Length: 249
Image (cartoon, rainbow, N blue to C red; front, side, top):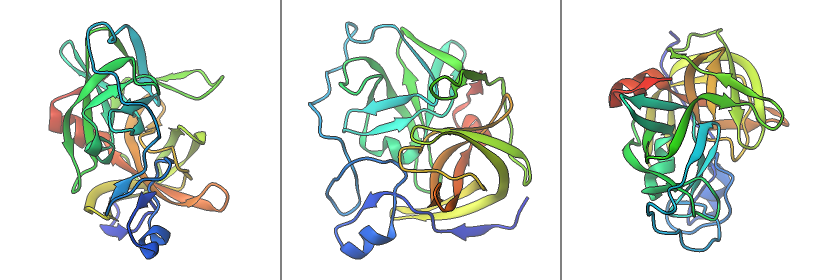
């Protein structure tokens, strides 16, 4: 394990001062918002209230986008389960402004609610899927890329191969470059993360990081860009699964 260190990633978080706007980039790729620490939101109609009628059958796999009730959108990293109950794994900062989650941008297909969240200190949350959601144990690899089955979870090691799938950039592969990394958010520090030499762009947050059929972590932040080269930071999934008593598919 590498030595513990603190990094300052870029996140697209909007502050009320111009200096903070220039300094912080939250990896969500949303449009403008206001507030002292505001996450950008889409301009959209109010979400449809969740009912049995609009909780119709839908498939959700790792890498899919879910839409929050507060105008938020975020990728699901992996699916997990406890007995017959199924859950989606999502960064904790994604869940700050949303309780209800939908499979479509119009927010008419209700798929679940935020069942637990830890942020800052950690950066993870779980979405409890409703009956009718088919939570698949696989990761989508982007348009025309097929899927990758996920059958286990493990802690990453420096030098290990890793691929991740982002909602903006699709699939990229590289190696794990550090473990036990701490990064600074406007809301506070998050520790115990790991990093890779793979780039990410706005809209990739929540994307799954995996090595073959093994889940390693979920994208929570990055620095740099895919044009100039960058670093991506992940919340490890083993700690996450243990915290909520879940198992990966």
